[in-house]
Image (cartoon, rainbow, N blue to C red; front, side, top):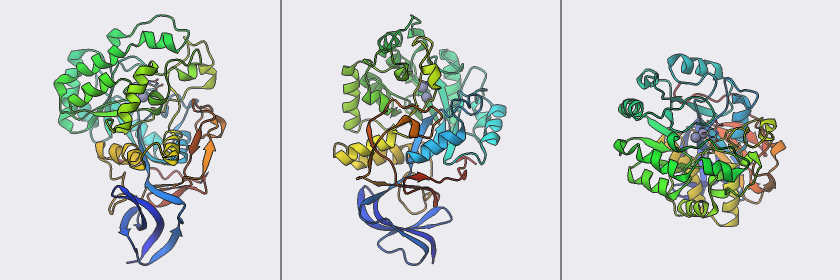
Length: 420
Ligand code: DOR
Ligand code: ZN
Ligand code: ZN
């Protein structure tokens, strides 16, 4: 059988890098092994590059519809592809929020043929939602237990019990913003330390504890910031997500609102403990929590600035730089940025394996580059990682189609909703 495309190079297969030929037809991987046979096109990536499964980011806020001056699905997904991410899951705190059949159907119609990467949508669960009514449309559900961007807080234990019970019966994952709103204070904030004081670590642990009755359910705790929260989540059998900013930055960032985020950056001891847990492989996956806001809003008084920071384009490249330096095993990055999120959310992606979608990110570990906010593809135009070193992908393929080549974005809006 002749394949449409054969990729040749050092690929990450079954936990190791090895010289591989990868056959691709109709957007799927059809062969992985020493010799793929005939192909219409052959691309030899040489010995300096490594072929990884495309990244899967289970947590982005692309602001579409409603806040497209901050981001839209085109810019958000171009940013994803440019950072080696071929599939994202988009959060429901848009305007209007994605909470019911009408808003989800409308959002899906609006996004069709506008994304450069594949995507899935979350529906929020609120007092008035009926999760079963959107089960055929969404990749997962989202519960906000603490107030943040958007007005879709659900903090009543009776409502949570009712809604989460329904979601558990549907077999889909519920991602949770776990900060107990009852413990969030409203004091004036002048800097990251004040923001942290208003949103204490105990609020995270307490929110997770309130979910203990759903032990063993498909619950995913987003952006964990404390080891206490992590251990609780694990003890209930929940999956766990961490952002790069919570393992890299502490609350000593002063009054720069670019570092204002929910949950907040913690003190360095908490951050270091979380980092250690990550290094030891105790966290299921990375989610960027890409939450772009306009620079003008971030340059506002700290107290008035919105929370959140961009990250979909920088998470994988910064992690690949740590692989380059030899401080993090490649297998951890692939697991946490591709394989685990794809497995948790039931996608046919996340590994170089026959039958999976032919999504790849190709890196040359010698190609390190300084991150510059104004060179990224998000509308945000800034990054909390300004000036840091990263290894951006050289080439990205989505279902066999080149979306980035020679380090340059060349995408087409072929991205599809993974749910259809
Ligand atoms: O800092 C945050 N920003 N945390 C969230 O939970 C939401 C996000 C946003 O959408 O801006
Ligand atoms: Zn959140
Ligand atoms: Zn988020």
